[in-house]
Length: 101
Image (spheres, one colour):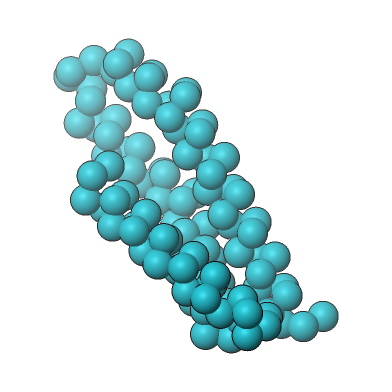
């Protein structure tokens, strides 16, 4: 198998997994934050961030590494522009995540 095809598959997996995780967090996890009392919230949030990093971190790293690979070594010359667009959109998502969420 061409390495770029395998990386494209890894990128697709990471992207779909992140999308599913985001939906779960938005629909289930965030609404349940209201049930955490004020006294427990600080400890809860620290544990939440620590545990979430173990789930989200590998997916995010896979997504950015594979997106970078696809932009630098696309499957076809025609795919180069789409790959750079995708990497740019992923960069915007990371900026939004760090700055807004």
